[in-house]
Image 1: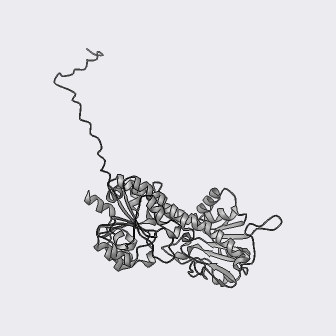
Image 2: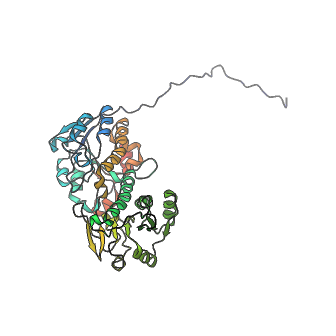
Image 3: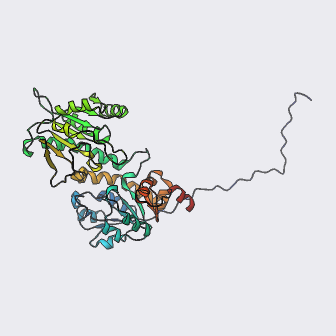
Amino acid sequence: MAGVSKKPYISPSFSYIPLEETLEILPKKKQLFIGIPKETSYQENRVALTPEAVNVLVNNGHDVAVEHAAGEGSFYFDSDYSEAGARIVYDKAELYKATTIIKSAPVSDEEVELLQPNQVVISPIHLPFLKADMLEMLMQKKIIAIALESIKDDAGSYPIVRSMSEIAGSSAILTAAKYLSNVHNGKGILLGGISGVPPAEVLIIGAGVVGEFAARTALGLGASVKVFDNSIYRLMRLQNNVGTRCFTSVLEPVTLAQELMNADVAVGALKPVNGITPVVVSDEMVSHMKAGSVIIDVSIDRGGCFATSHVTSHEKPIYKKYDVIHYCVPNIASSVSRTASRSISNVLMPILLQCADMGGMEGLIQGKTGIRNGVYMYKGCVTNAPIARRFNFKYTDLDLLLAAQS
């Protein structure tokens, strides 16, 4: 009959059998053995983990060994670490028996010798100082090496680079203020000016994080700020982040030369292009600057953006050329080492806790793309394309390596 719906027929042989519930089995928590060596590199005062971070790790069941006097450059003493639950080790070779080594400076030649097979090393890398024989040694020992500055967070930014850039930007202005004063044979200018006296003119080249924090600090002190960058987006972002309208311009030589003649302080904070900072201020431009003005070249670790810049040290930080004071110290963050150490520690401590939860460093690298981004050496394979190209090593894609393992 049309229009009459049939009743559904259910066969008595059809039965619903409840399936067993399968729960995700999390990897067993892995206890880490972490070693923090004393940095021997020139002028490195930072330490990778503060006593507070060590305390959190120890309370989570990890074993932390700290080399004697490792934190003294940042005014963290052995007693602070031992109270936090760390073991103080007096022999470097003994410390290098730890399965995870964490450093705030690149691995040195002597330290490569001390590394044990299959260790995990988390440290910065400075490409200009990297040597092929050092990489070969890491490959032979099947080290998992992670570059601090290449670690990404969940938002896709580089937290350690960002915090060091924030420090460099703020420090650049405070350093300039110091060298403008008579105490350091400057011309005796107060950066911020006072009622009835115009403020100092600060010119910043580069509107990245360094430029933004330099602008923020200079404006906070009351200086007049002018920012140059070739990216309109970065200039716009800087103005929005700083929260006030300031003079911005694209990097155009005539305007730049004109403004440099009026500047009391010039900060170089340009991003490197293919690893080298473009030189945008010529010798002639510097020669026309006011006598007694100050140049702070923050980009000096990648060549600098002033033609007159050359590397200086914390012991002898300045020199004069054309009567202009030049400050070109590469690791500015090391001059405020306690702040810098806390900032590195804040990034590393949660990573190490996650590492334990995910069953060790291999598990963390598998599960976190941000950490994977920092791995340049994985169990005998070079997993960073630029490094492999530079030293003529075979490049292996880390994702393929991990896929083959799983």
